[in-house]
Image 1 (cartoon, helix red, strand yellow):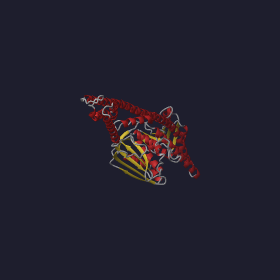
Image 2 (image 1 turned 90 degrees about the vertical axis):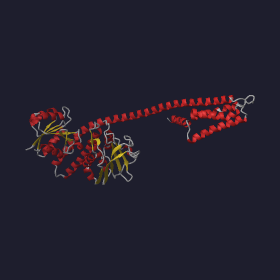
Image 3 (image 1 turned 180 degrees about the vertical axis):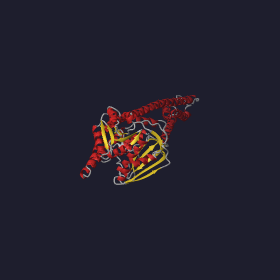
Image 4 (image 1 turned 60 degrees about the vertical axis):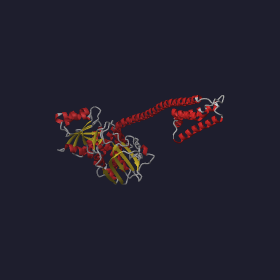
Amino acid sequence: MKKKILVVDDEVSLTHMVKRGLEATGRYSVMEENQGNRAISTAKQFKPDLVILDVMMPDVDGGDIAAQLAATHELKDTPVIFLTAIVTPVETGPTGSFIGHHTFLAKPVQLKNLISCIEKHTEV
Amino acid sequence: MTDTYEFNTLIERWRKPRGRRAVAAVLFIALFIALVGVLVYATGGTSFVWLNTMYFPIILAAAAYRMPGGAAAALAAGLVVGPFMPLDVHTGIPQDCANWLMRGGVFMLVGAVTGLLFTWIDLQYDSLRQAYDQLAFSHEELRKTQLELIQAEKLESLGRLAAGVAHEVKNPLAVLQLGIDYLAISSAGDKAAAETIEEMDEAIKKADRVIKGLVDYSRFEELDLKTQPLNPIIEEALNLVKHEIIKEHIIVESRLSPEIPPVPVDRGKIQQVFINLFINGTHAMEGGGKLTVVTSQSLLTEGAFDSFSPPLTQFAPGDSVVIADIFDTGTGVPEDKIGKLFDPFFTTKPVGKGTGLGLSVCHKIMELHTGWIGIKNRKDGGAQVTILLKPEKRDVSA
């Protein structure tokens, strides 16, 4: 069964590429959301196995979305990966690392590293 | 400034001559007194001209040695002309000693008053000199502060610009990276496509390195200082650049002293310094070489780091410091460029290889830690970079 990934980023081309790259593996079903303030309602409908979040978005902060996910009963256990330009690969390592309570991946990320990070967080 | 200096030098030479000048001055005054004594004697003690000439050596002695000099010269003058003084200058009839004593008293008075006058001039001069020195010091401080402010403002603007640019450029880079990764999957088996994708991948990495340099340079936030051992940070940094080191066939020798005390550092930032330095060393030794890392603790001695650039100003002789030395066997740095190595965007690497920000970032991070980083060429080839950190807690402001 394909894992469901929700990608929230205001960069339309980026969410497209994440979707294409992940779906090309045949293991994921990806939903794009380019408006941060609609992320929670989209997540409620899509029920993702994992959410990839940008941090800096024009309408809402990625951290706020993560907090709202944690506060939403049916989404509170959904793992979140922050895919952001505010960290560097030296800080996160190629496949992401915990900073605070969240996993961060630095942009630009290689597809194989993104997949590796997703697998780490979605394996049962 | 030069005129003032020459004036000062003249005054300083005139005041209390020492050494050979003192001998010359005393001899000159003594000869002057003796000569006048002879002339007084030759004229039978009757010439006011020669008697009054005696005031010149007294005044000269007072000018050179103030009141004691004036008094000594007056005493000498009195003693020299003394034997002739009892003669009445008008009649030539011997008289009592009153006249001699009066003349001697006047000599003494002139010597003492002139000495006091010169002492007063000294005080005025010293006071003016002190005011001048303070003014010159304040002027220099003001000039330095102005330069620092201009530089800080430039760097702050650059930092803001860099952070904004970096964020905006990283998103399209991410799109390109994921795009070529996707194309690599979909065009598997196509050799030409694979080569093209590899070149594009390399181009993205280069662009990302430049952006990373800009981001690093713009990040001058507060330090997260924790007192911790330095050696594990260095080992971790070496591990992070392992791939580059192996690729360039470089041998690493690390002699990390277990004796060095913990240092208050921001782990991430100091690690970044070492990563940058190891990468720089590696790039300087294309095709192979040896990278040596040594840590130690020492008490600073005068002039120990004089051959490094920039000059060591953060520490004083006798300070206890933790030292990290990084030696490479690479090409070294042209001597005319070594002073500019820590300037932003200055690089000696080939176009596309360096961003010119690595060492600037290192320098800034060391400044934040109130530490020091210096570089010099090694006599037997290659370069040496040295980092100094204070072991105990210091006041650090970001």
